[in-house]
Image (cartoon, rainbow, N blue to C red):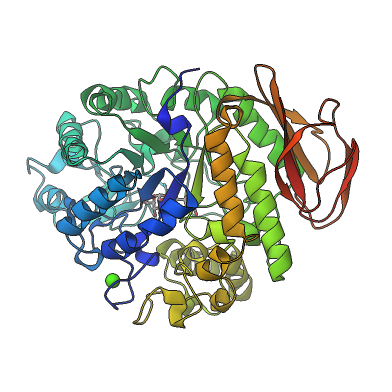
Length: 557
Ligand code: TEU
Ligand code: CA
């Protein structure tokens, strides 16, 4: 297996809008990030991935870009970005930026020109089709509810948008589109950025004939997935991007790949390096999905989770590289989703054991802002507390079509809404958690008075210091990066246990992912092993009982 820096790194994701406000407008910004670089250095991460800060109407918080080479005023200026990059580099932190090129904003000059008339030179920058029987070209539904097609009255055709109607999909089959994107990417690379996180990159190649999608019972729209996800030319386009841009620099690239399978990942993230460094798969995040997409309050089954993550660990071994995550700006908080946030003590234990379970695996770990504190879902009340376009649109669609009762839908939003990840970073116990001196754009979780970075920095046994230790261990022990993985106790309903092996070395990680005591027998050979990390008391002997949310990692030389 090739040894490279991005396999040995830990990435920290910043959602700029919610990280640190510097000018009192209630919105986090680039100067705010600069202020907190020392905190990130203290945590010990290697790479920062910063979610979009480009010029944007902000209807999807920056994932709707109207100028790829300008900074949205509320986030700061290009000088601020340059300073952020220099200040990060001065501290040995690399900076990965978000590349959102499946779609643009409908306010992007390309789209304004494209929609101007049918013979516009930019018409083919987007995906236009004639309607059918007085309606859209097919039955596809958008990821943000409603049809995936919107009629443009002026030219009488429909444009495709797999997300919001304000996010028209680019036509990657047009070589001019690819050249524009590659040129823009080189411009950022020449500035010195260290990589790209590529938004829904698995969706850039669409099958040219676009038949109706399968209609699931109870849904109004058909699924575009078979015709859009991992489409016919996606690997060809990424290989071209790799030849013309990526291979000319020393980058970390990670594709956000909804609909990713192990086989597909072995293309996107192949060890030969002809496409991307790694990809995000979604399968473990979908384990508590089901009917009505993700809108339910079901819990993830531990036996299923183990089988699934093991499939990824073994399936990519030596062939491609995994990325490891519990959280990002689209997911509810893991401690509320899989752990127990009902008391501070249980919250901290479950946050730590979940971290341990993930961070001892093979792949590059991603820590999402606040995860290193064990930040929780927020106590949202009514619909008006939510800001996220996906949540708000889904509420209307599902309650207005009678699929969900309003009270039940609100309950599901409180559990699963993306806004749970987007409440402001909790820095200290001062008003608004030290995030802003103004009015925050979304509610601050009231638990900040007790749950905040300042308190945790001052307390050696905090979640922060546990994450710091896991990151340090990864930097110290090659086996955590490169060792091969093997699952133990596949059918144990509470314990996630696995080994890592590198040459003569063996590591054992055992985690009780439930709030009930759990017993198991350890494999031989760890009797005099070194304890790397521990949540709860140190284990003794081979027949052990773990208390609620306890776990440990042992290293045998
Ligand atoms: O997300 C893509 C994506 O698949 C999500 O919409 C996902 O299905 C959903 O969040 C699960 O609830 C990316 C970005 O991460 C997201 O923030 C953007 O809204 C989206 O693309 C459009 O750019
Ligand atoms: Ca601000």
